[in-house]
Length: 112
Image (tube, rainbow, N blue to C red; front, side):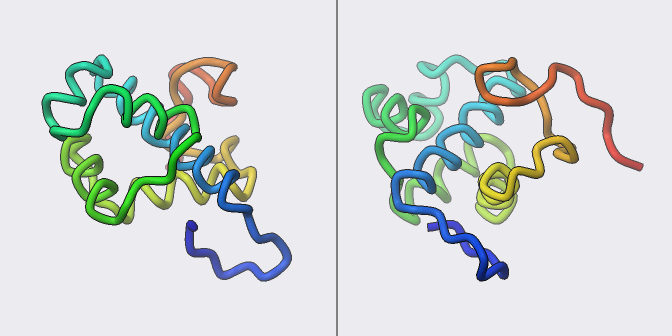
């Protein structure tokens, strides 16, 4: 589950998996990677990556670290993106990308 200082909202395991999956998907697409390319970089199976991105599986800490490394980010950055989704603060997300199906705007401006 994504760590958070707020006590008024606690995501279920399914929600945490969904938020992290969206964060992985967004980061992958931002970098112009296909899922098959991420599979090669992480050595995680395509099926497992698909399950993660669809929010059906929550990866282990080792898999999160592996994903983050393959996406040229830290595990903290990846989990922070998931937490921003959980909190509903994607409008202020400096990592915004992709399309409406993930709740992000394409080419959102970077905050100053």
